[in-house]
Structures are given as C-alpha cells and as structure tokens.
Length: 489
Image (cartoon, rainbow, N blue to C red; front, side, top):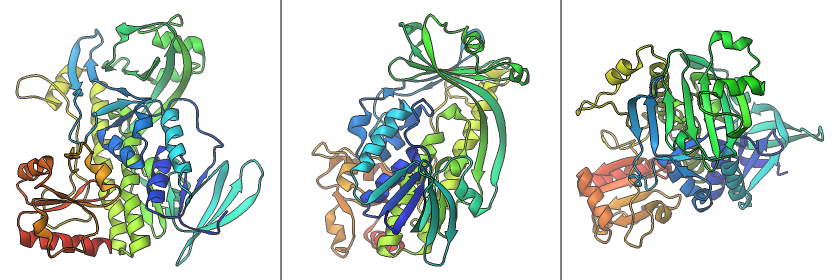
C-alpha cells in the first residue's frame, strides 16, 4: 500500500466507484477503502435518469450498462380502485442530455460494471474488506487508520483529501461534527423484491403509485423478471413478523402470489429527508448518502450521489494538479447542497400526496396543466450558487449534449475537459491559451442551433457539463474565458 495518495475514498458503492473512476481518469492517485469484501448481491437502488447516464458516459461504461438496463416508460398514479389520477410519462425519445430520461437497473450489475472500469486504472487502488477506524487531519494531509477486517491487521495511509461515501451513518460526517438538517419526512415502508417464475404482463411496464391513505404502495418493473413493491407500513404493522414469507405474500396478495414469483429480498426501510448542513471541512468531504437522504418516490437518491461525484471530481483535480484556489473546492457544497435539497423537497411533496386522504384533489391542485389534465414533469433545477459568470441566467443549468456532424456525442469529444461552443473559432484569436475543447458552430449545425436557441455567441461548459457562462459578443467572450481561467488555475 502506498504511503500517500491524492485522494482517499471511504465507501465503494455507486457514488464511491464513480468518484474513483473520474478522479483516476484525471490522473490523481486514489485509494478506496470498503468494509464489505464484495458487492452486495441483492437489489437496492433501481432507477437513474438521463443526466446520470451522461455521467456514466464520462466513465466509459455505457456500452456495457445498456445491456443490463430497461428504459422506463413512466409512472402512473392510481387510486384504490385502479383509476388513473395522474400521469408522469417519460418520452421514448432521447432527451437533450443525449439519453433516455429514465432507466431501471439492478444495482449489483451497475456496481460490477463500475468496479471493472476502476480496475483498469493503474493509479486507483481498491481495498475491500477494510474498515476505516479513524481519520486525523493535519495542515498538509490527512491520516487514515485502517483495519483489514479478515486479518485484523492495522495499516496507516495518508491522503491530501478524504471523501466519505460511507452512507447514512457516515464516519466522516461524524468527524465533521455538524448535524444533518431534517426536513421532517419519516415513514417506514416494506420493500419487497421478487423474481417472476411465470409471465405476468398484466402487471405492466409502468411504475405505479397506488395512492391510498389506508395502504399506499409502489410497483416497479425492473429489468428482466425483476419486480419490486414498496408498501407503506402502519404503526400496527410493527407487531407483524415482517421477515416471515407468509406475511410478505399476504401484503402482496392484491398483485401477486407465490405461484407467480420467488421472493428475493424484503427489508423494512425508514424513509428520511435529511441533508448535511456542512459538506466539507478542511480536507474532509461528504458525498452520496453521507450528505443527503431522501424518500424514493422520484428515484433520485443514488442519482444525487452520482451528481456529487461528477461535481467534486473535476474540482479536486483542478485544485491538486493546477493549483485552483479554495473557492473552487468550497463551491462543491454550495452548488450540490441546494440542488439536492430541491430533489429532497420534491420527493417529500410526492410522498405526502400519495398518502393524502383526498389524493385526486391534492394531485390536481399540486400539478395542474393548461389543458385541464394532471401531469407531472421531471425537474432539472440549476445547481446552487458557486462558480460562474456573474449575472448569467444560463449559468448553473445543464448544457445540452450535442450530436456532432461525425455522429459523435459531444461529451465523447470533450472527454473530461471543459468545452467552448462558439459561433466561430475566429472569435478566439486572442485566446489561444484556452485549455479545453472547442466546438465551432461554423462546422457543427447542432452547435449553431444551440447558440441560436440561447441567443448567444458562445457557451462555456464545465467538465461536469453544467454551464459556466455564456457570451453575447466578443467582449463578453474575452471576460468569460478570463473568468474561467482564473477559476481553475
């Protein structure tokens, strides 16, 4: 084991593995410590969206991942009699992000693919079956005391920065010492995963929210023969033996029987709505469930962690490799906390509506449409205040992913670099030092259309694909590039 690394990651779930991949691609030396000896083989998270697939694209795993996922056609909200209350359709076409808006997946498949990609990076060293006992911080590094769980051997290693991707009971969050902000949602639900043993096409491909104040439930159609139900538990349910197969089948009896499927997993979860008040302290950072927990009604829990990884990775690389100042690292917390809170609050809002005694009226009031229907649309909020071109209304919003003339997707062209989409490369004669990829709208029709849509002559896209800023003329372009250079160097 090396004695010193640029970054140490605690936790090797999807967030930790994505972060390890991105940091490794940036050329940083990385060590990962994971208490468990192997991937947890049973289902947990089941959904990710187009932005997260775009992040996976940057890790190079999409070709393998697409073989394992299922495109989700959307979600329907129904009452206790099965009548449609509200629709949340997901269009079959790819979105402006270049991918479908909703995917269903089996988490062990994703983790296996992510870990394989990390194994191909010689500068990333993974130690499974290792528990971090303590972390102490110093002026120029942090020291981790680690135990080999099997061999009971103690080892010590140093790192410039330590990232806690270590879940809801995070060791790193405890070290930072700030409590989480609790938004007040706290419910116990039974989560049951089954594998069909005979066809049940009548269950459908859409996710279904069964809105019933007496017993709310969620049905999820997973890849292959996998199906999931999440069932709200009442206080009196706690007296039941919720590990007993007979009890589980009784709760599932409205939809499925033992003749249809095998139970794969059942667990009681307490859905919470919490966001860390402090996401970093000196050399310590939080990501994933260590920084936020949310109800699952929007399927955004894991997604938020993957976004954390994309935001933090390039900033750490800019700081460690190019000397970017502390302001860039500080922007991680301000940008991601605000963004995660919006998803937490929307998930809480949906959860409250699903359990409402007059659900139809509540949904109609919450999500009215001009045509009189009740539909829900996915949100794509901007990140919180952090870095960017002052006064720019586009700053902090996700950029489009353009399909280039050579049929290459824009992010594949950019790699992990920033990108400048510009009306004409002639505008850059005074900026030959711009360190990033340039997409010239004179030769790229999609870029030309994007600039026209925004009414600008240039868009500067960060490595995490959020917009740093735009320019409407050559003077603003000069200022934009100067501002970017000052931010990252």
